[in-house]
Image (cartoon, rainbow, N blue to C red; front, side):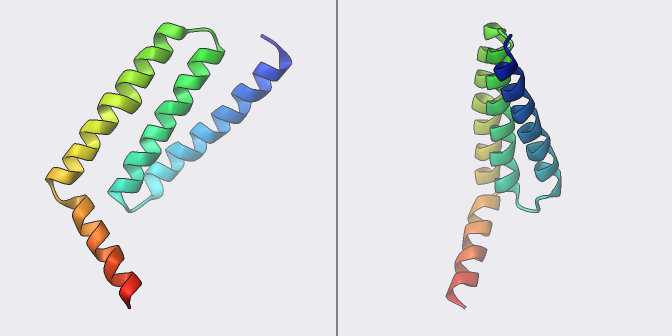
Length: 94
């Protein structure tokens, strides 16, 4: 691996740390889900850069794809997304 690849991996790891901290600090379930999916997407890129394509495909499919979709479907099912959108709409009107 080149120095440029190492630098890019370092930047991506900082982004992953930011995403993981932000997921824990956010109050919105929808925002936490999107941040989790972003974390998984960045992790997928890191796996590609360290030349592990099998892990990258698995991370993309399971981490960002299936898990993210299931989280979003669960939020929709418990009406958490609807409540957040309704609450945000009321705040904008006032």
